[in-house]
Every structure is written in structure tokens, then in C-alpha cells.
Figure 1 (cartoon, rainbow, N blue to C red):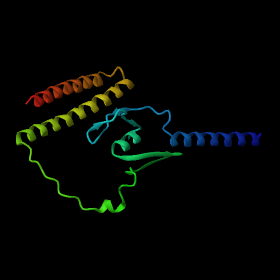
Figure 2: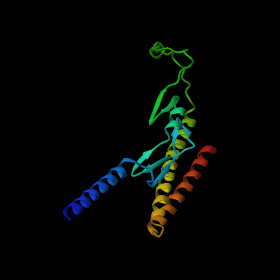
Figure 3: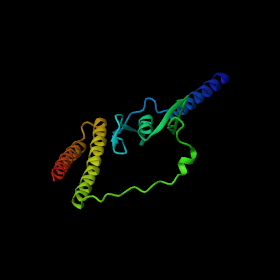
Figure 4: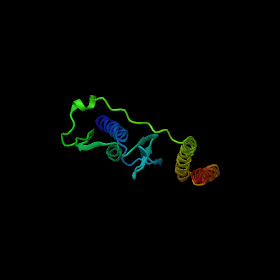
Length: 171
């Protein structure tokens, strides 16, 4: 009887330990809490970044290729390497002195307008992120009046920012 009880306890300990190890080692099956738009050098990617357990994950291939890297996958390793130009560049080219580039001074009124638009764009990005995050929270708690109110406020803020941007673009 003691052997059976000891065997049962040992088996239970091994099962619980294996399940805990498996649960912490993978993100497969975890819920996505939010999605974010990703821009690289001002270009929007088709695939969004996602948030799982408070950490963000971005599409490596799309970002790497857009940034000018050669992206390759071997087994479970993703590599980002410099693209080669068919052997036209050499390692000495990396240390070459660059020629000066002429600087064109923009019209000050355009610079101010562009700065205002950039500020509005940053606020729009924040509003979109707030809308996405609140929408995700609302899916988990669909009866929350506070979340519904916040979502409507964020949407109103977003609409107002779009109007502001449109006015700046018309100048």
C-alpha cells in the first residue's frame, strides 16, 4: 500500500512540474492583449506588432527587409545580415569618407506646419494605441461602463486630432 501511495505522489509531482515547465516555455495559445501599428523609416508595415503578457512582439522579417537587411531562417534561428550588392562593396567601403551633402534650408512657415503635423501625428498614434488597448480590455470586460466611456473619449479625441491635422494640411 505504501508503494502505491508513494508512486502516486511521485507521478503527481512529475506531472505538475512538467505542466508548469511547458506553460512557461511557450507563447503558443496565449491571448493577444493588443495590436500596434509598426512604422519603419515612416513606412507602415502590413503586419502589426502584438502584445502578449505585457511584452510586444514585432514581425521580424518585415522590419528587417524594410530596414535593408537580408533576413534568413535556419532551424529556429532568425538572422539579419547586411545585403550584398553582388560583391560591388567591400569592407573598406564601410570606412570611406562621405562627401558633404548640400543642405537646403526649408521655408520657415513650412517647417512650423510640418512640426505641428508631426506633433499631431504622434498624438494620433497615442490615441490609436489607447483605442486598441481599451478595446482589448473591453473584450475581457464587456459590461464595464468605465471602459466604454474611456473608449468613446479616445474615439472623440482621435476624430478631433484628424480634424486638426486636416486643417494644418490645408495651410
